[in-house]
Length: 324
Image (cartoon, rainbow, N blue to C red; front, top):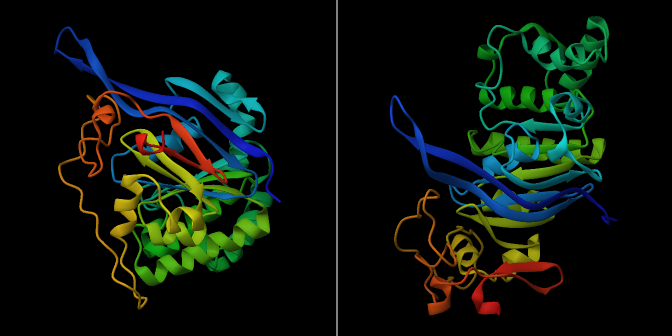
């Protein structure tokens, strides 16, 4: 039973400075890619992170692994605040925290065979000799559905689905506890997506992994995730148990996202909620609720006051003035 959080995120922010000038540059503001978000990821669960493109999902995942340094807030991994650690102190923890990239081809060195690419971390961290690393890599190739003869092939010789299997094997080579899966199936054909999703489920069970699964595909998120957190323009809109959130979404933004999901089931036609207007810029986000410029249920206070994080029961949270 899931009881303890492996990862705790507290008021986490990541701002990218915007400068102006050629010879003399000056800062004119910040792009607030991630702005004061808080949530927990429990040991052994898959937490889905969803939202439109540009909402800050990928930045959140990379900041959690400290591939990008946070601007503010805390990231507590296994009861240790890793935001206080320097590069040297982070090195041992990187063995436990890995990432699966969206584009497996761009993340693989074309000059290395896949065997060398997968085994490189073991040699770099001095955890195994080259012979031992090769043995480990051959084992992982079988785990992810590839053959031993793939060891000496180069990335360009693989299909997209095979390259993603290589990326998954590389994320497993250090025996991690926590993996950020950043849109791992979005670039693949539907039939290949199903294979990779099933593979991720198998390795989670076999290796006792904890996942942050980032995606804009709500169908995939529903299939894989234990809980789901919805993100909009750098802030969190809603968080809850997967089935509960999909059955009874609270936030108007979540309702709009789910209303757009097609279904092949024979049931009463659902009412589509069409959003008007464009997503505001994170350089100058709206005052109050960031969704108020597109919300069909907007109230006067939404334009002035930022909504608090409300617990609506059973671990379901929503940031919306409708629940004051």
